[in-house]
Image (cartoon, rainbow, N blue to C red; front, side):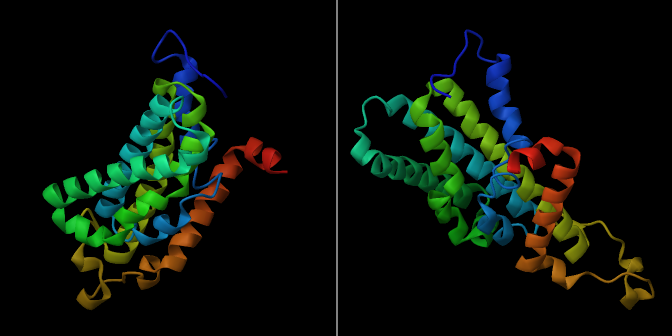
Length: 220
């Protein structure tokens, strides 16, 4: 898709760059990218939201920057330049997290740094950013970041709710429901373990393909 663009900043084609990665070309459930971080940072909802925003910012801005530089970067060093751009953005994001959400930053720990090696970011730069104008590249990066982040948020929602009985740290399942207080409910410890996150991703993929038969046909 070379030189995608339109006179309208929010033309149908440009908006599709944001909406398609949320469903039809979702980087996690369709392209099966970024699975590792999906399993690692979604034990609770708030870290999942912060990670989703962080990756979306880095993905969008890095694609935009590389699109601006695409004609001036020799092909033989493009990967090095990409890594420098992405690493710089990740450092800035990490510093912002430490300044404003320090506790979450500690929870995310090394996984913020590993955004640098996230295959979604490098993949979108290679597949789209280096072949298109800055504005569509920015939208494509944001769209793929949102698609990735949406899966993180879904996983974080169910894992925190079923594993701790809370959402964003607030009690959702009443204490009176728990067995220890004479009730019928007990938190599911398995749901906060990485294997359950993988199972949940599989369930999301199954639901998505059940409602979108085209994904099955394209896979075949």
